Image (cartoon, rainbow, N blue to C red; front, side, top):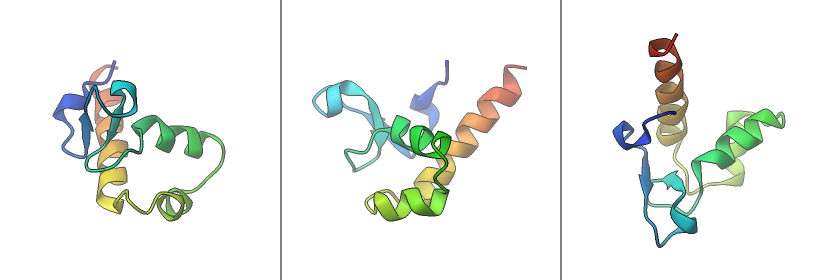
Length: 73
């Protein structure tokens, strides 16, 4: 399981979107990024569809997940 509390691009608030991890300062859940990418969207499309998410945040989430998988191999 990824430890999102070490990623500065995300936050968790039990009063927002049922406590799901979200991009900091937004109500966009982190899982929305992965669902969209899995469905064939590009990162640029995701950022256009969710303009409140900053490019650095999405890239930080992807980098965080990549680093997690590197350390669990």
